[in-house]
Amino acid sequence: MDYRKLAEELFEYLRFKPKRLIENQITEATRGEIEILTYLQDSKKEVTSGELSTGLKKTTARIANTLNTLEKKGFIIRIQDKNDRRKILVQITPEGIRYEEGRRREALKNLTCLLEAMGEHDAKEHLRLVKKIHNIMELQLLNKNKKE
Figure (cartoon, rainbow, N blue to C red):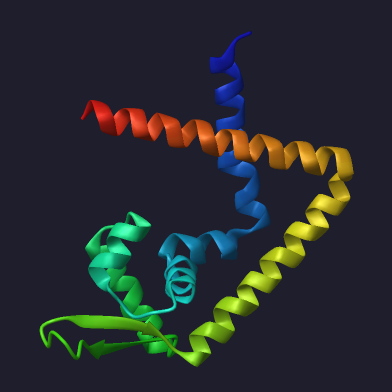
């Protein structure tokens, strides 16, 4: 089997097909707004921009730009740490929580429709393969980090 040829076909398909289907979602995701809101919502506490950078594996510059955008939208606030006045903490606002939860509900609704259209067998197989891909990529990343 020519895995390189399969990889090229998959790469081209993923590179072009989804763009036309979900351009707005891709644009928002690349800015990282949803990632940050989800991280803040899941952490249930205030975090520093450095923690966001480390946790989301994004540059501090990217995080800072996205936080500025989120702050303008009223989805986050920045507050001074009571224990260390030099630190600025990021906190999700009630409006940010509503927005993030709405996006999550919308994504789950869309994913549910997709899986239903695939049928039970293919939906389960798809999930199995996504998990397998995730595990393989995680192992490759661990092995790469060990070598460095």
